[in-house]
Length: 293
Image 1: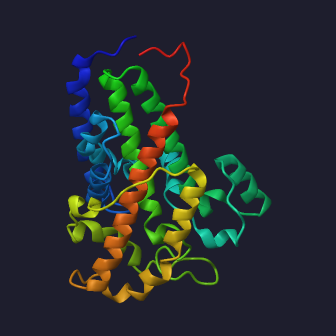
Image 2: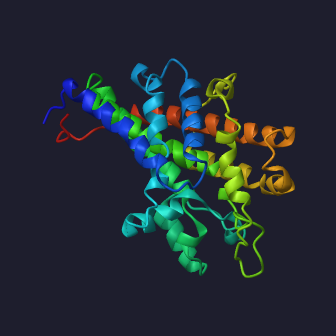
């Protein structure tokens, strides 16, 4: 069944209405407006080679970007169970064990090591899979460039991808010390540090244009190695976050602003680079004949 351009207005209305859902939900990861401003900045950092509709769709992507947190809703127990591990990876639990390229190879390796993959976390695989979902949507756009519902699919996939890339760049999403220094039993004391970190892009009112300024994102040659490199770079800053624990509530602290600006620009650059990678991947995708748009 063909998708007609006159259906575009209801799609925009639905995308705009989604913000009411995500803003009314409890916050996990960067706060909702934090995700939105980082996503806006990622789109502003994109080069002209990206499709026009995509570079003009930053607001739609920003509205979509908090949705994965809204999916962790106790009224949706199956969805919550599947979604929760998608936002983090506690790197220390792996004790140097390499991360396989694919999700179920990782699940198998966790089982062999006596680990629960849902406890360890799955964010690298969420990032990789949503990059490829975006690539598939881009491939459809290449075949049907005027189809506005295909364009909407691209924006929705990009908004979801941005959420996971941005979470991965928050150091406390990469560690067992995600909410206070974990004890010998592995349990976090729930010190409040995570919530303070998550709030800062929004509380500091970071400017998307300033975050994007001077960034020149480059598509990675290989997807999962780039994701794992970013994961390790984020994890390397855990001690830096804890060194500022007593200052995180101080919006006037230059050290706090410097840390959050660096992490925000890293997230913006990483997200934009994966948008570029998805666009490159899409050129080689052969769509099946039965797929009709």
